[in-house]
Image 1 (spheres, helix red, strand yellow):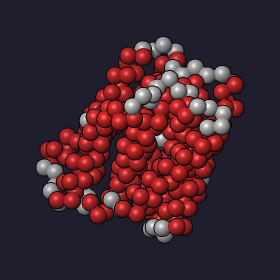
Image 2 (image 1 turned 135 degrees about the horizontal axis):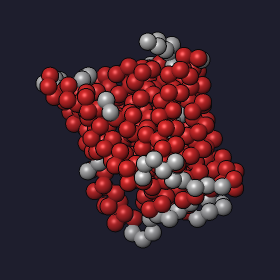
Image 3 (image 1 turned 30 degrees about the vertical axis):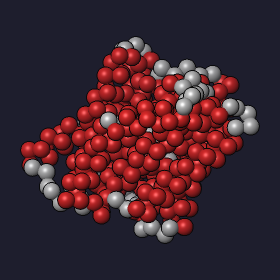
Image 4 (image 1 turned 135 degrees about the vertical axis):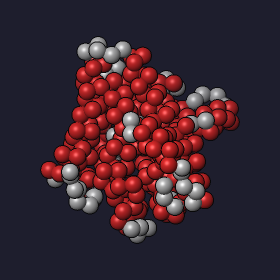
Length: 310
């Protein structure tokens, strides 16, 4: 257990540094946005492209894992939304459902999963991003947006096909499937640029969390979605991947750990854009991140292989 804490807490500490810097005014919101944009547009795509291209597609992609993880994701989304519908309209209920089903797999997945599982974790990270970003974000946008669903689907589709993270996953998968090795200088360039993905993403996440303003009332409101995100979601993934599908342990471990990630700030952006349960979703993002600081190492200790620290 100590080894998992030693691995995870320094990573979450970078989030704390970003939060403290923004809260103390050492950095401006524009600086936080710039760091986050660098990570999203350049560093994270470089990391995922190199990792996906470096291994055969059959090793990084498993149809059973993808369908099982996506099914668990949609099940949690639907359950939480259905539980919220008697008390709220469709848009706020969908926002809370999305908060329970959208983990910070893009920013937290690489720095937390790769040290535990090695480069084999790149495939599960990519598939979880496809599930929680490409599918849940699109579904949530349609359910939250007023007016024509077709118009909303078209707008979301245009955003997704230009998403640099999704494009890098697709490009890396094609290179891996074709067994085309990256030239040495290109691989070193992607490795150097991608090495900045973790620290910059985590720092920007902390700075973003510092902007969220919540009160005690929201703690009770958000507690159900936080419990669904950090407890129900990993449990459903474990049941689907391990018990129902009987996948190999590495796939089950990867899925459970990815499901145990705290809620992504994308869920807050989505709620804010559609003016749906913005305060509640911001509370879910903040509280799930705080709780995951200790909940994730416990989850890793329960399901992951032993950690060999340097």
